[in-house]
Length: 222
Figure (cartoon, rainbow, N blue to C red):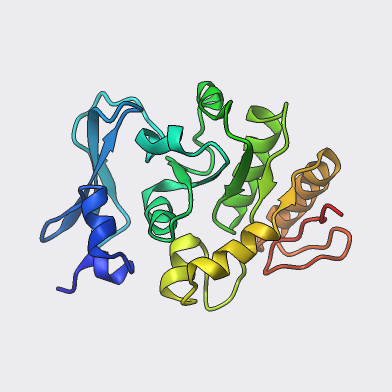
């Protein structure tokens, strides 16, 4: 069986930096606290969309938390380990939350010294909603910037950009430069659109002040 890590486009440097391990049927992704102390491991099946943890009583944590204090100028909050590892390989500051709608309010203080916060979740409805909720409910006292993922070559997440769309660091930095500020009016409009789209049982694909990127539309800060 071909290496799972190779299929994800990761180098030996990335694999070793995060102490990733590969077994016949699954991979192991260790988690560490802000001081670099081992917390637990997450295991992910290579054959199906299934994961489990090394122990039952874990407290969910941000991934790559042990590097967060190095990321003072900016940080990208993304979904999970796979996208975090991809951004690390591109030398882009990133941490991963356990899911689009799994971000503890208490984690907000970890970003108090970060100058600029970007949010880059999957470009499906849960990802769009999660980015909105994170900006509106957790980081409501400051600006956050939404990075839009294009819908080319079946791209759904950041790792797809590397594997399917053959993006480079420079390509992703262009997306960062195009990031839009989450606005109250934008959040309200997107929520209403998503509500209607859910009724129609189709993916989000709507207009807000004329800017279209993939299937997600946001108004742009000028």
